[in-house]
Length: 379
Ligand SMILES: [Zn+2]
Image (tube, rainbow, N blue to C red; front, side, top):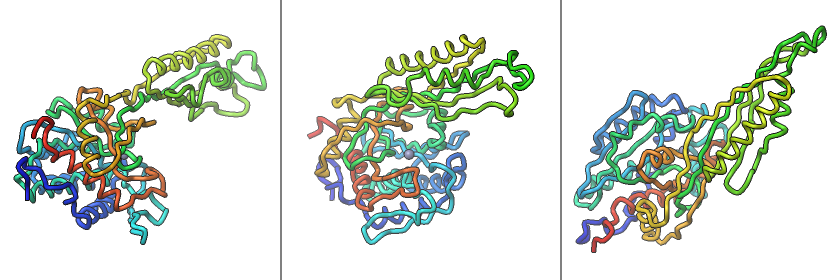
């Protein structure tokens, strides 16, 4: 049942019932971010049984390599952890073909939908050993929901992939996330001087007042089309009658344009420094890059392959610019160009999270098409 190119005859060979059963089984395994023991063991067993070479690193990232029948290696990226602390997730299939929970937990389609697609792909390749496909490096990270912790610590020197696909976004089926922002976490500590507010306020320097001045002087919210910034947590102070000597501000800034982000961070830093200087206080301004922007051109390999696969299913390609990051930001930063694809998940991280079975199937079919489409230039 294979044509001369050794290609699966058509992508629709994805087995809907089997894929659904895999998804439901994965969702039932607890996996709150930072507690990936159970899901890690489950996935190690499943990818191993399906013929992959398995590696786990010291923090639990899983790398499963499935040997190709032709030259070339691609990366397929997912993550095994789920957002928040929910356990005991029980999926419910509605009459409308949509999988939800009872509303007391998230569903965990982020990112079990992506993983289920990988396992279905492997099952198909095992059933059709004559199929044309490159070597596939599946990276299933831990700690993605805690700020891309797993992929940040992954040793990418151990990977051979020339390009890759991240199965971890919401958005319409057919969308290709080609552009993602840089995200920076800010921790700003303002130091004043403690004094008794009732007895000798003249001796104090209020870190709260410095913080108020600094925040008031900062551009926040939507800065421009590419850039956003926020101060999300303000903490400090001890008592009503003590002039506070320390306030910590936690915030973030993101931009799809690195120069605009740098300019925004400079403005935020200056607001803090000027507010501190005006009152004789001091400031520590820490900006930690969590992930870096990437932009994949339409004519770059991962974009082209994803687009042909999507079109081969009769879907329209929808270029998507994301407001957040994925493990793909780290792969891109480390020289493995990746695009991110929709898995069908909707409302991820919320108790209203859901996924249509039809979209779960479409996402798996897209992956199968990416892997089994003949190489470019091939007749
Ligand atoms: Zn995710």
